[in-house]
Length: 85
Image 1 (cartoon, one colour):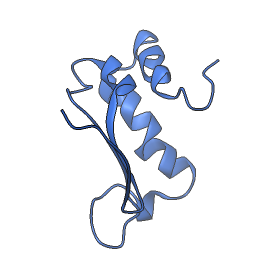
Image 2 (spheres, one colour):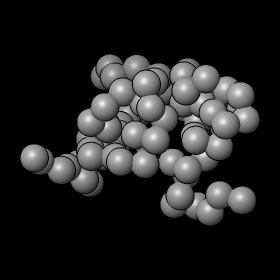
Image 3 (cartoon, helix red, strand yellow):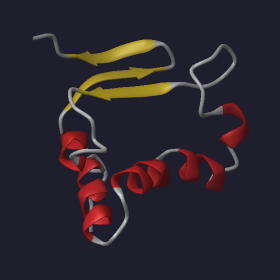
Image 4 (cartoon, helix red, strand yellow):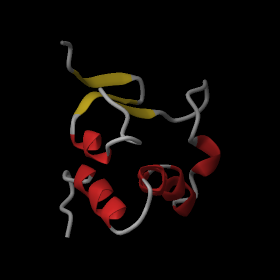
């Protein structure tokens, strides 16, 4: 079981179970939004859309473990985490 707050570990488990890294990421983003009935207002960085954004230093498509190393978090236009090298 993956505890709340440790959600990034779920990506690696999904990949171990057979999903591609892209499929694992989509399962937590656009698929989750669609399941919650929110897809119409999510999925774009554009005026009028809700935007919770995270960033990692390297592509999680090459290494899903990067999702455990979030360097930037923004929610509703407010930056909550920013790591600068």
